[in-house]
Amino acid sequence: MPQKFFARSVHEVAPELIGATFLVDGVGGVIVEVEAYHQSEPAAHAYRGVTPRTQVMFGPPGFAYVYRSYGIHWCINFVCEPAGAAAAVLIRALRPTHGLEAMRRRRGLDDERMLCSGPGKLAAALAITKAQNGLALTAPPFAIHARSLEPEIVTGVRIGITKAAELPWRYGLKGSRFVSKRFS
DNA sequence: TATGAGATCAACT
DNA sequence: GTTGATCTCATAC
Image (cartoon, rainbow, N blue to C red; front, side, top):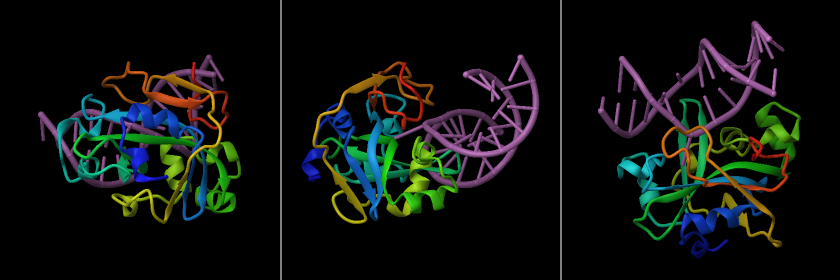
């Protein structure tokens, strides 16, 4: 996926990521759920401006923003928009297709549907930590392949937030059993 | 099926 | 000192 793909509005990029393949060191799967975040709304980490944690979101698009959630989990975002307009897409769930054994080992689970059905689980399965924060998405260990067919997309409100909770900026693959929570 | 506690860290007040 | 872009496990219905 060229850097140009990410240099657009999160609202264009986010739905187009549904169905794309995301791999880290050859391990990963097909993206089935994402959420969009933008500097202009209070649920976004970038809302309050540049901090050491959020600085990568204020840089050029096509880079990984990794943060720790609730003290224990890691979550990964794809930075979008032209440099300066901080926005990112949170990758929330994958349908595992590559490196199933590595993911099962890292997660200590067999159930395919449990491996990547949530941002924290996904990061654990792909071995994502702060070591990947700020890395280019267009080069190893990352590999992102555009989808070949346009899938059916469903939208909903974002999960686990209290601010700007009404914005329908969650995108999912219609009917997928691998999402973190069903779309109503 | 649903709710509740605990884990544990960085940013912010 | 409080608050999360969360998950798992336990307990209850």
